[in-house]
Amino acid sequence: MKLAGVLFVVISAASVGFRFSYAVRQRCGLLGQLILALRLLKSELSAHGTPIPEAFAFLAAATKGSAADYFSMASKQMHQKKWMTPEKSLEIASDKLRELSADDPVRMVLHDMALSIGRFDLESQLTGIDCAVARLEEIRNLSEQEKTLRCRTYRALGLCAGLALAILLV
Image 1 (cartoon, helix red, strand yellow):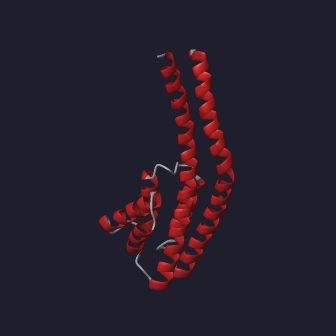
Image 2 (cartoon, helix red, strand yellow):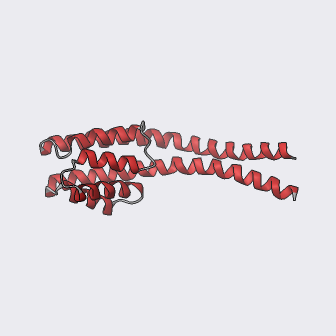
Image 3 (cartoon, helix red, strand yellow):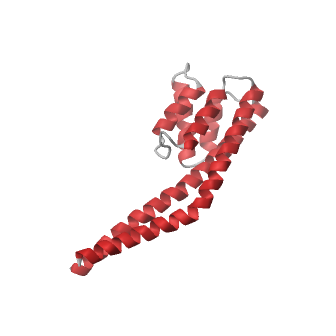
């Protein structure tokens, strides 16, 4: 019985470490999806002149995971409330996206990009999207560099914490 308890404690603590590691990997995936989505948005606006709500719906279908949820929420907001600006709809979508905290630099980049969408001429909108893509690529590169080290650290800390608790319990 004691061994089962020790094993349970070690597995529980290790799973916490693996969960943090998973969150780091998810963030890198989200950044990749957002970069893809913004490139698609640029091509939709420049080549087809797609209205913003329809472009957001297209992005929701073309991406996956949290990025798809983000653009889907923004599109729904704009379709339900015809007066809503892209900036406001993306802000509401950001609030509902649990991966983006209030002080997350990714959220700031998306907010800055949203300020130009639908407000300025096409060339200015495309420039705003290009700037956002460049900044998101910088953030993704930093996240990728940290990913290996942070994931390994989180997993090791979780396992060590579990072992330490097991020793204290025995």
